[in-house]
Length: 193
Image 1 (cartoon, rainbow, N blue to C red):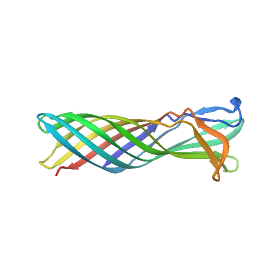
Image 2 (image 1 turned 45 degrees about the vertical axis):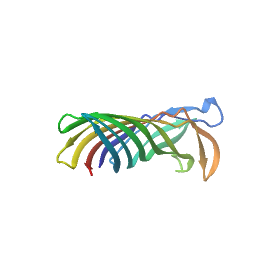
Image 3 (image 1 turned 135 degrees about the vertical axis):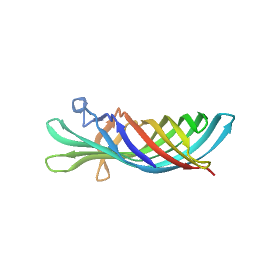
């Protein structure tokens, strides 16, 4: 089961026809999440190698007020769900297994630009993005088949430029220079077959 998660520092530039319309902003969101993982592991003396896949039900969102060209707007960013796979390498100390991991993870990044005066959505985008996952953790064997553990994962997503739309049609606005990161702390309960 996954617990507190957050994404940190989304920098998006709204572009509306020229350099004078560029606007930078940041949001930070957090969420409680839940999910599952499955994998295989093999022990070589005290060294343990494993491969695992995971899916986390996540809904981390935040918004910020901006004033592009004197027009107040709300900019909302949201990460929906989190999935991927990783290779773990650890060293067994009796019942403890500290490990490091590297892998690939993805999420859905949603962005909504709303004009505050009338509540009209003037631009939005949604895309699946992915990036390198790095992490570390420790598992503790509570019985022959059950382990509990704590895990930290960091993912920096490769977002690129996103075309904004309104009612399904492209508008003259893009999200550029995105910097999207996710920090996830997980409490794990595993059953070994």
